[in-house]
Length: 86
Image 1 (tube, rainbow, N blue to C red):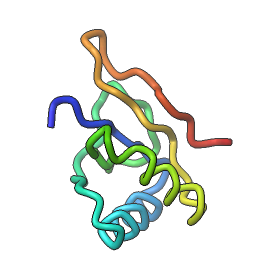
Image 2: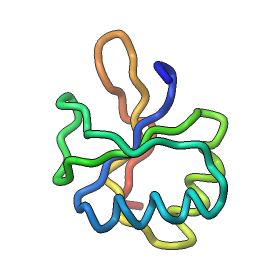
Image 3: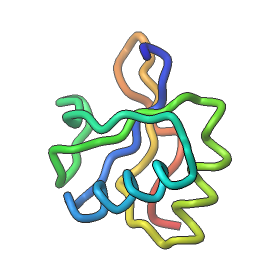
């Protein structure tokens, strides 16, 4: 799970909605506390495998889930790889 991507949210409602949608799509993921290095309005984030990124982005866009962003953990901390506001 060290190389998994992290999706952060501004609200718990959006985090739980995304969790439900991803579970329905059978995306392997985990709901966990937002890392302190990521500034977000919600204490919950979702981590998932990098290979699932296209499916996750498609679901987020098509279902209009509001996210703070998607991040990759690097040696220096978390790096933004996708911004929620498009």
